[in-house]
Length: 119
Image (cartoon, rainbow, N blue to C red; front, side):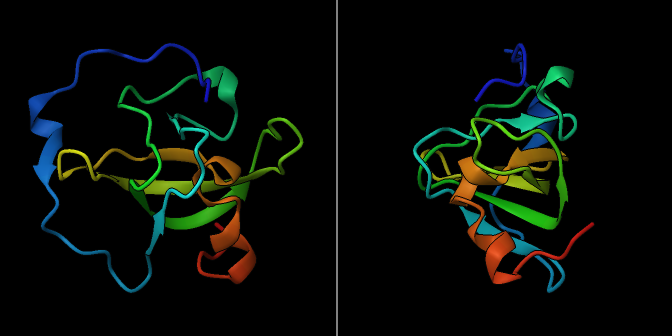
């Protein structure tokens, strides 16, 4: 997914082992789409990504709410406010806040099922 240029360097202080759990108010949403979900600065792609790797199938996000934003490829305008990202390949969790496009995460399933409240 394109949200602008990705910053290649990551701060080592941002990486942590996935040992914490989401609070009751947050939803763990697994990436079930093969599109690749980038974490963006806002719900509008023109403002770019936050500078962390895109999420792929099997990874997950922790989201606390959803909002409306860009409608990419006519897949809807739902974006999840993301508070952390979990990468299955290396077992890492990043605690970088941003926005992920619902259709590229889980086909908007958490939105439709009501697992994530509106922001």
